[in-house]
Structure formats: structure tokens, C-alpha cells
Amino acid sequence: MNDTPTLALASHKAARPGTPHRHYSLATLRSIIATWSERIRFRWELEQKLKDDPHLIDDIGLTRQQVEAEIAKPFWQVSNPL
Image (cartoon, rainbow, N blue to C red; front, side, top):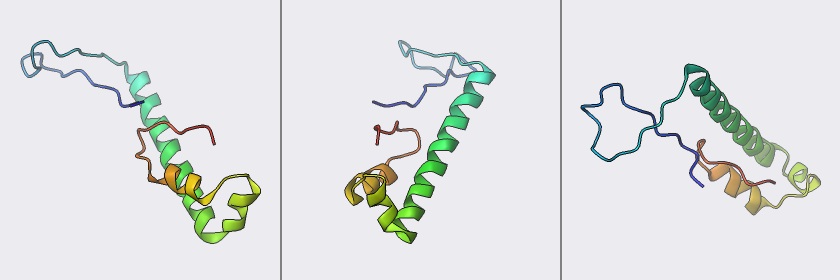
């Protein structure tokens, strides 16, 4: 599932006809950015654990492949429950 929001253009002239628009409040945009930041931080920390203490990955019940797949995801993509 793609979790990336489509932002409405300020000028409707620039938009393509028939293209749906979503309008987000400033609070919603801040929330989206905060969520993306949390994902970046989580995946970075997971990568550090994999590099520094790989035995911790085993201790929390994950495989190296699961961790590498999570780390490889772009920040806008939702994590699968680990």
C-alpha cells in the first residue's frame, strides 16, 4: 500500500483535468512529516542494531532478511508488523 499523500496544487490551472485532489490542513501535513521522520529514525536505529549488535535482532525474534527488508523501504512506505 502506498502511503504517500497527493497534495493539491495551489493553482488549479497547473492541475491536469480529471486529476483528483486532496486538501490537507497544516496540522495534517505536520503529522505526515512527523510520521515520516519516525520511520526514518526507526529504520536507521534498526540498521545500527544490525551492524553493531546483530545478536539483538535474534533476541527480538527477527531474521536478518526481515530487518534488511524493513531497512530498504522508503520512508513513506508503511512498515509491516515486525
